[in-house]
Amino acid sequence: QFEILRRRSVERELAESQQIAAERERQYQLSRANIDAINVKCHDIKHQIRQAAAGDKSIDPEFVTGVEREIAVYDSQAKTGNEALDTILTEKGLLCEREGISLSVIADGKALEALSPSEVYSLFGNALDNAIEAVRALPDPGQRSISLTVRRVGELATMHLENYFEGERSFSQGMPQTSKADTSRHGFGTRSMRGIVERHGGTITFGQRGHTFTADAMIPMPLERKG
Image (cartoon, rainbow, N blue to C red):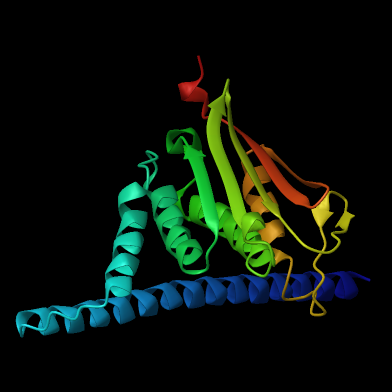
């Protein structure tokens, strides 16, 4: 029996390690896609600048409008007071801009001081990635929107995220269940979110109102900041 328990423990640890590796690979691929898109845009800008320097007056106005719109994403990013949160919001903001998704954020990043930068990146990266995946294929452009609020309420840091979704969602023990066939490679993101929040003595709940998915987290503030 001891050997069986030991083997099961090793298998569980191996599965968790594989899930963590898969999550890191997914985040890397997303970041690389953003970098590739920026490189493509920089190449296009250089080409337009060379044309202008050569006296070519036929600069594509649609291209200029597109550049202005993407630069506005950088300019409009509010400084939340948390560098890790600023980074993830900028990255996901660019992704949403390219995919026609509205991302609305009201955030006090200072409320997240209990979390390490990597925890902030993982928590909000997973939350926003799941929301983006849910809304990107919606046929109604008006529903391709995501709302995120981060603020301090008393001695708690709170997060509220909501987005539309299509189809049906099922929940087990308060956790959303993946609809994908390969359950071993999916659903890890929400489990990771719960692990981060609970590690700091907080709670996280997932739910739905009609076709709106919601995620709410509450994390105690550090003791030295209370009062």
